[in-house]
Length: 464
Image (cartoon, rainbow, N blue to C red; front, side, top):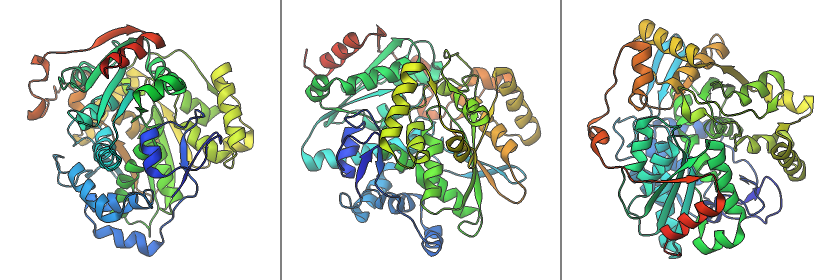
């Protein structure tokens, strides 16, 4: 399997190469040259596999030529050994035909663990094989950072620097990052938004001298391996509900577009995915695009669902590449114009190709609290703000006879204030995080300035 950039200026690269590279040299995102597809009979054969073995089977078509299936089976078994639920991603029917797929049973209580724990194993395998060391730099709107830190803490093969927007995550999210004391971990609170953090990471990758000096890599969902590692839980849910002999739809609370892109990718691989519904908070650029063909940036507004407080959804570039018939020049021109003008213009035919598969819904904070309250009163289901938005989007897009599976992306205890305000219930953290608020925090506060952030990373890896 070979990979190319969405912007077309790089030669084909292997899975191991793009795992360590993260972002393409031309600023684009890596995509598989062709989509691997499974037959109906192959899907049926996967129904009996454990979750780790299913993940290994799905990943094997993306790692072909680099990491074989037996090795992947070992890595996946290690990745999911510490999850608190035997099913890893259990399904719960909360309304007739509407299912919650709980993705928060990993160590940091968010869906990011589903991919990040596996990425930790993949990085260790490839870096050991190549006898290399890398520096991982990532931006987080709340959950990616803690998942990455948990997956890579203490590793002898890499250093980690995570940027989060100061004051724009929940306290639980922040403390899950900043209370980790391992020497290879650096936390930076940036005086700005998540989009500012994401732009800083992309600027570091564009700075060739810095990138080479620290041997830069990424674990944000700009890294294709993150997307590939999220595909298996959509496959597992669909198989449990009758696929490939029955269509299934998915709803995903969406910020950076990576999680829902994994569901879309499962469809490209032959899984019978009928509809994809995305849920947005007041930062609704994706909903505006899908309902009005309006992809225009606005100021990022803080909300009860901070992981979706995003206006520039990086992974949308991957879908755009496909909507433009994989024309890298057209994709490049569109993305550069978007960043320059703050508005993406696509032909009506391209927009309709997107709406043929995707639905969208926006809930502001008041509507989110109302949805959380209603869910608890009617079904006894305690949802965090992000999941509640996803459930509302799924309900809106649900069709008779077609199961709708909603990605439950975070444990309610990650957002206790919002949950308590909506339901009167004060969710408690699991035992392994019970002392979180008593632990010492450690992080740097820096302005939104590339040179200062790069200097901090250099000091972290011993180059300054």
